[in-house]
Image (tube, rainbow, N blue to C red; front, side):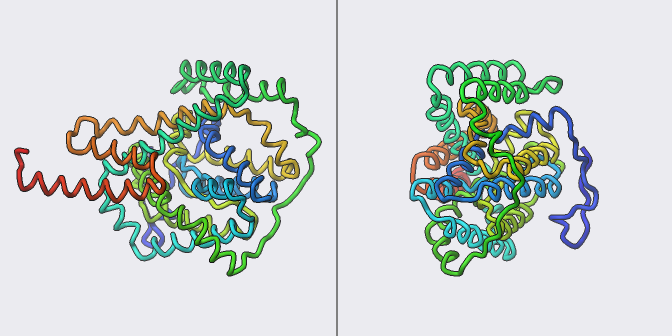
Length: 395
């Protein structure tokens, strides 16, 4: 792969020599690698907060397109998970959600501009980042197995089993990418068991609606939604994503500053056009890569799907949701989780680092605010252990 050279101004964001973007069957297959995470969250947030379907789908797709062009690798865009969970559970208003998007965008911009994100990247050890990846992988696998695959009863289990077998047989196959027959099977299943769900009747051209966030909504959004989200974003969206990009694309030299800046810009733009707050994520990158994505083409193709659905079917958002059977999404999500967990193997042979990785993963998945607790506890334990080894090297 061609290595990036950079200019002196804005070098982290606008490289001078940009790798090629491909649009082939593997990039198309990779485009479906993150659906298991994104689609349920988008549906849940949009319905709970009463969002405009066109705005949600189009802006989510536009963020994918821009990210694919800027990064030129399978760098995902995902709904903010902690925010989504709170909105769904508490039925938070659209105004509060948009205010939270602006608030977290501003916070991330400040952290990036002041160098605090770079400092965090230097201080937090790799084994702790691996623990965050482990926790996220376990969380995704739990959702896939505990909710999605069980969603449609016997017929859903049959779909999931068929999708699982296809994926096992074709995973990593560059000639016949696994995601394409899995998605086709899911769409056939949806038509047979759910008809078109009224999708055809919702056809029509619509544009996103403009929204002007108010100061009170920004304050409320920061307190209610952004504060719980920040620790998860620091751990997964920033540190774990940079680490995974380094694992998969070591010649690209992706910086924490660049990830933080695009994270901030997305959320400073989205609320004005009715889009949900978004982030990057290690799980999404693992999903795109596992199903064949190697360039920004997979993310761009993924974005085009959402833009097209939003422009022409956004008025029937609840019908669009029926086009993605949950058991199929569960299988995709499960392999995304496995791809993420697999990277923990590089700490397995270290007697000092592996216990820290496992502990951080368990704290992240098992406790409220587990990602920030795991981040702090794991980093402290790592440095305490390193100090002990210096004092007693034979220990």
